[in-house]
Length: 173
Image 1 (cartoon, rainbow, N blue to C red):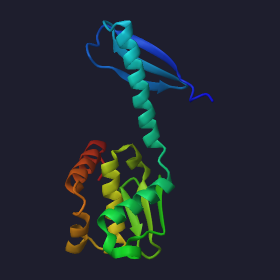
Image 2 (cartoon, rainbow, N blue to C red):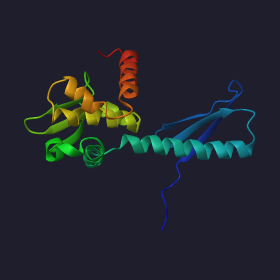
Image 3 (cartoon, one colour):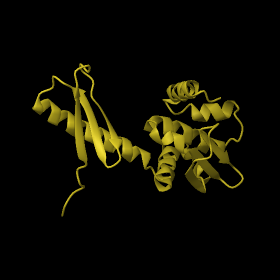
């Protein structure tokens, strides 16, 4: 049985590059940019490394709604166990029409939506946003009880800072 096909790779050497290596997809091929002084062995090593990085990045970009629902279940088990079904959403899905917020929750129908802009972000940021929305199923407002429950996640402040930084760079509110 054959594994996944290796893409066509174009290696571009640059005399201006000293240490950095980068790669990007250009249609069906992958372009890898390396310093001119790299040996053939280093080139081969870096091509493999960059192909793996691209595959990992692209894998993160194809996150499914089913994966999101499973992630919600894990977060409930870790942080909201005592709330049982009260913390359980009816649906969790990625949406592409949320540009002013990272996520939203409708407690009345127990639905949670996360902006697809989060898909490229680290898992711990997605976990924070998802937990934030799950807590809204228990506490609809942003009161002290709400923040106490969200604060059970150890990376809450780090994730909030990350999102604030992304918003600042992109000019979003």
